[in-house]
Amino acid sequence: MFVGCRSGYLEKLCNGRSSLVMVVVDRTRCSGIGICESIAPDFFEVGDDGALLLLREDFADGERSAIEDAVGSCPAAALSVVD
Image (cartoon, rainbow, N blue to C red; front, side):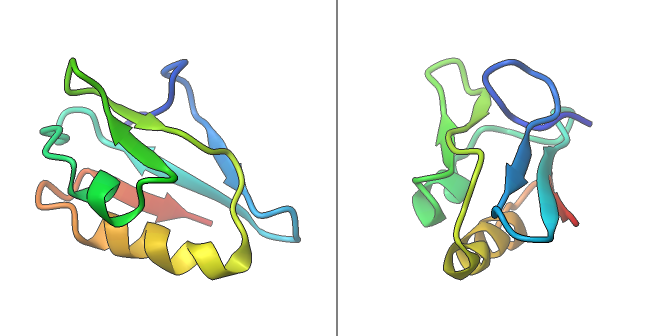
């Protein structure tokens, strides 16, 4: 499993407080549909090549629900949040 980021390595999304959160992309499952992008466009983007990118490394406490909604809405179950 990989985190969908520009570099292809694990990219940590940290809210600047005590918790560290990572969004993990299982590239063997991701089909690039882009539902995550439509729910949380400030965090997810599907490139022209169909690869998922993480756009931001940090988020406010109030933004976590959008990330979790995007993860939970993935029809391929390719996304997960790891605390």
